[in-house]
Image (cartoon, rainbow, N blue to C red; front, side):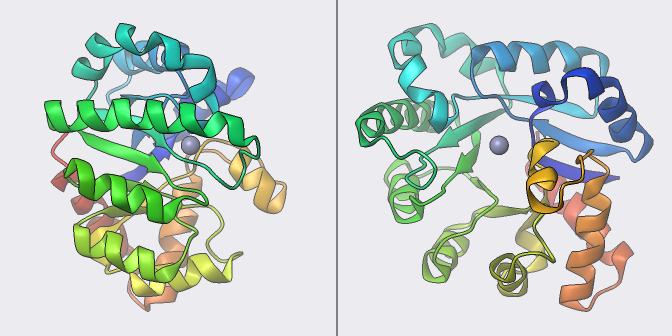
Length: 244
Ligand SMILES: [Zn+2]
């Protein structure tokens, strides 16, 4: 059993059946994050035929400005999903400052629901790590999963103290910062992720299937100087502790 705690099943398009084969062949417990309602419904349908996939509902920060008017339609979906995500803030890739109020509005909507329904969240923090930490504290969230953290190491330590889990992504071995983060984090708070097929392409031009998590486990075991099997088991154990 492996873990992909942040993927996007709707990104595979023509390669979807290969991606599902990859998930089933390596037994990868997969959190299928959504960008918006349409992508949640797509992943939810897939999950009906595949027990390895858990659909997560959220509005991605990049899509917030297109969805903020529809928040009152989302309650049933938030209630039914096991994990809320992908949600968050992005002050790095989103350059248009006029979009920020919508990002904050949508993020706070989901945080309020996460608190109300006691849900785990899958959170994007790019360039807004301090703000996300403040929001996590404000809403007193239960075990948030921080997706592909790449910010300040002091904020990382505060998120760790809070009780967050962290997904290590496909840039391990390519990014000095990610390797440093793996060194800092205790194995008991680490999960693995692929973030869809295009993230690996962005790193090394290879199309990323879910089985890439096996390489990530291997690289974590090298950095932490532990056996592959010990790391694999512990990450699966961490995933089970989320009690989905
Ligand atoms: Zn994502």
